[in-house]
Image (tube, rainbow, N blue to C red; front, top):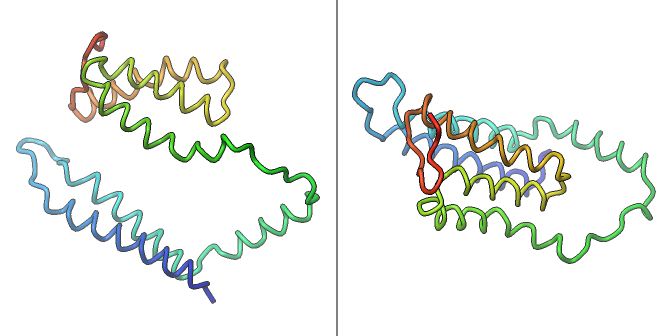
Amino acid sequence: MTPLADRISGSAIAMLGAAAFFYGSKLPPVPGQQVGPSAFPMVVGTGLLVCGALIVLGIGRHFEEVAEADVVSHSAPEEFAPLPAWRSWLALLPPALLMFYALASEPLGFLPTAAIMVLVASTAFGAKPKLSVPLALIAPFVINLIFLKLLRVPLPDGLLPFPW
């Protein structure tokens, strides 16, 4: 039997998915393009709807119980030290980065803003500088290329315009 908390959260996720699918399907098509703005919310909505239904039905719960039992059998309770107080504030980092993007993307441009965001996020969540710095230098160019060439959505140029 699926616990009540799983049924409630799964139902909420499924309803969010249904709403995303429904409102995404109401978006008008773009003339001359096969894939319009409705595709992304409908795909995400379908994924959320399916995942929510799987949670409600308890499918995959057995794997979670096996994994929890495996972790308990391989670790002693003294290994779990409490997290430092500053780590609990990391939950506020993604919304803070979104606010930073909203405020800084127009004047700075997408490339520097995204580089700062990737560097701050990856470092804060534990990446070493030898990984976070190259990631911060490469990821914004790849994301901008995807938006510009595949989706045909220009991102803000700001101080550093995209080179091609």
